[in-house]
Length: 180
Image 1 (cartoon, rainbow, N blue to C red):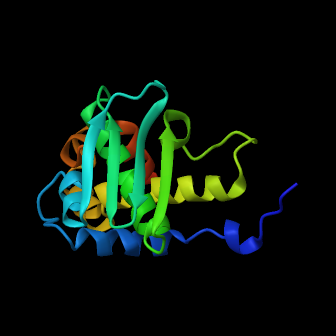
Image 2: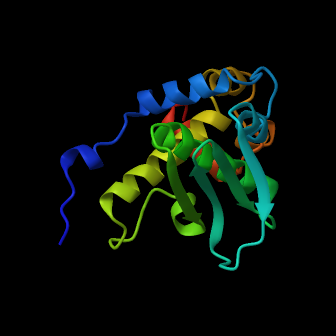
């Protein structure tokens, strides 16, 4: 049985993830909403393509081979889900793949859109998926912009539309930021 060192499962803090998302956002114009994760990917030299996966549970993946990085996102997913998937894969890029020459993450709908995992999922993988989810939320719903927009109109449906995310994602983000 393989053991996992404490360093492998030590998670980045919310503040560290927020900071890395803000740094990534500096690659594109963040003054207009919703934030376009494809533009950010392109600015980072990452190609984004839609795909039909043979496994219907797959939502997206990122693959880095030397200087080439590609994100694939499920073609039939709704736009808000595609945006979150791309942002999640960008999280893997900016948090987990930057120091590696080669690497890949394949994300299914079970792990991608929630923070609770089955007991069979290794702790290190859970950590990376949770971090990528937090990065995606911070990227698509940057704290300063959420606070500004929330002060003007705290309606979750409106905010979800304004930021191009699901109502559920917006609800989580507002709660995480302590706005409700």
